[in-house]
Amino acid sequence: MMTDETTAEATERPEDEVAGELGVDRQRLRDLRATRLTKGHHWTTRRKAVVYTEVGLARIRELAEEMLAAVPAEPFADALPWAKPPANFWEPFTQAAVTWVRVRRVLANPLVVEGELGDGAVVRLRVRPSRLWEPGLVLPAVEIGEGYFEYRGKMPRFRRRW
Image (tube, rainbow, N blue to C red):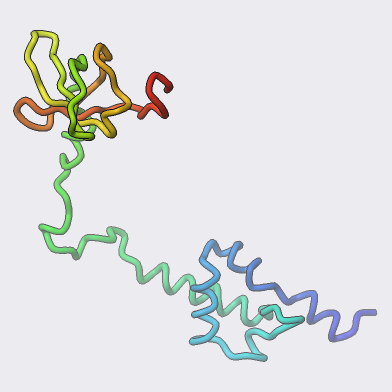
């Protein structure tokens, strides 16, 4: 036959376990415990660990449902019109035309090399750092201004080592 103490221990749940079950941060659960729950009735400590009683677990679930009901379906529906980006905001970044640029020479500027397009036009190519590049390399780039391109690709670890 089980005593009252062993029955109570069987119904108590540790705080980290409850946080994982509910999918909330343990700090948020700790704040909720400090402001909305009472020690002894909803929770207690066992060997320096916080454990919740059945009453406390039921109360936490009620509070979680209340918090979820308070969140609007569209989180930014009440935001100012200029606070939300337009629908096509990311389009230029995802569909940027990639151009292949051949490195002509490495300049003294550590962030720029001189490049050449397929039609022979000389352009500046922004890279990081320029000491890793050498003449003759053909690199993918995106135009960022008239005559200026930016390298888009993986960075080499060392010169001639990818």
